[in-house]
Image (tube, rainbow, N blue to C red):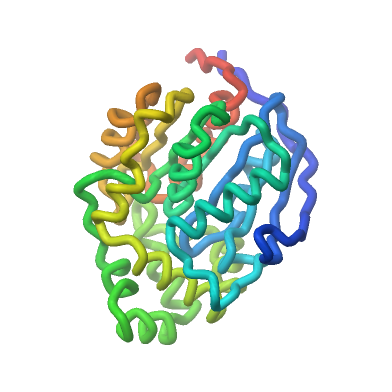
Length: 282
């Protein structure tokens, strides 16, 4: 019988300056004793983690440049800059120990996990940008990484184009849920477009590989969840994460895409149980 954590935890919203930048996050009292940090990808924000927070508790923030957080022009938007910001965020919340859940570009927080490895309790990696050797950027990322062409692509993106692009990310050409499209589009302003371009341009393949050079230090139990129908990041990188991180196991989902919990909602319980150290028995 599968065990599950308590559902429908109360979620509250917060605004505070972190590292000099106005930062938005939402939180719920952790279901277990250790808080969990959820880090979103591109082009989303903390909204994507709402169903997880209601199960597990923890904190989901909008990274600088995204969602309702500040989008300053001076922020360089590199992996290193986000790592410094996340360390400041964790310090301001006063966490001695924490769990980490990442998806897509939220994987940049794995740099933070390597640096704070002795304070990391458990890690969940969901279809994350590979901080690993051998990754080549997908077609749209190559456009964004190209000066001028990336700016033009951003400027000509409309809501209907965003909806059509979203069909690539899921099995059977399904669009993202309307509320997810709404959240992305409402926050897809010039500040977020600038942040996306800076982030992608800061990360050639060599930089990604170097960002994961200390995974041997990350000995916390790690669950790698991978939707195999992801058009952006091949499944072999899910396997490579599980082989590279010492105490990791891989859960492959042949019927799920880039945001696998949209196609397999049971992933939310799977994540909650793993973070709470609860075994699921079929």
